[in-house]
Amino acid sequence: MVNAPPMSKGFPLILGAGPIPELAMRHACEAIAESCGCGLLSYACGESPHKVLASTESRRDLVRLCGDAARFHRDGGSWLEAIADWRQPVLLLVPGDADGGIPGVGPAYAALCRELKVPLLGLAQLHGAWDATERRKDGLPWRGWIPAAEHHDHNDAVETFSLWLRRSLLSPVATGAIPDRT
Image (cartoon, rainbow, N blue to C red; front, top):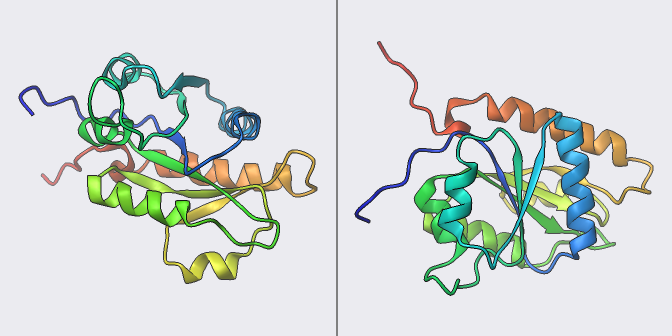
């Protein structure tokens, strides 16, 4: 790459892993942003990845990407490749099943992020039954669960996830900062 993009300023991009209904994704992202006390910007995968990433680099808002980030873009490459180039931290929302299982797209997206060197902050299960024991077995960086708004654990789960997110964004690793070793 001739012109390297700048280092991440720490805003996380929230991506869906696989087919997530738009309304469910939007409601979850709005709840997370509200709980974190920050804004939420939404962009479609049809928009130019580099233009969007350039316009949001100094923002301190959550950024939601609507659509399939792994799909090739008409400008060349995919959103995930552009995100890797810009070194933007990513959260993956993975749809959950009623029985506590998750589809293979969650591990597949996590593997693709590793392959492309996308800074993956972690995965959060969206809806379905939460089974912490099963989540630990797959070795993925699960950070929590966002149940449906009508679920009795919704508020607590969103607050717990948001607390983790706020703390992780203070970490030099999450923001792409290099610690001063002098």
